[in-house]
Length: 214
Image 1 (cartoon, rainbow, N blue to C red):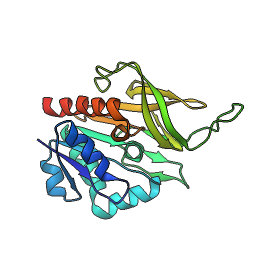
Image 2: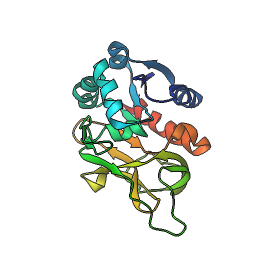
Image 3: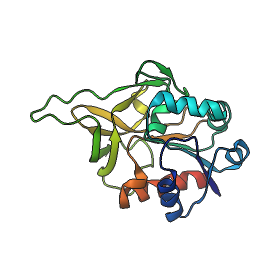
Image 4: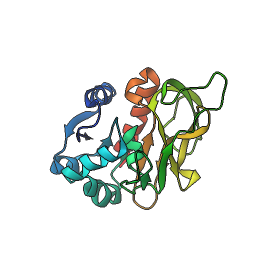
């Protein structure tokens, strides 16, 4: 079983690879469509701006591969941070940009926290995720486990049932998604499981169980 981590020039791929390898995955960092098609599961990581991320995916032909082949095939797909946001229809970050449209919804800026003293945006550091129990991503973890975040924008799915985890930072936002509409089997986290120590490794191991079950 091989997991393909998409290399499209956005983010630190080595930490994702090391975390997955630690929980027993055989991993390939790649932009080669043939390797991606042959993989048992696909990870879309990412750090940076939405528009730039989509431009990189398109330049490599990975946008159509994900949207038209991987998602419809039912291959397990995991989006991390920017990778989570790219799965949605559109983003308002630095103007309007189309996303992959795999999970219906949009991406907007995290609302300025109205607190004294004010919380900061970007939201950076450890914060709790309240698991909804809607899927197995948080199996064996505390319902209010802490994970590591770095972001200024948040995903707003059209279907609230797609939310697998909620987090508070001035407002309540979706910090994990699970969308299994039709054949698609898609999970996503706004936080970085690869930087979240024991809890992050446990979450990745849960996702690998989903991959193995296919």
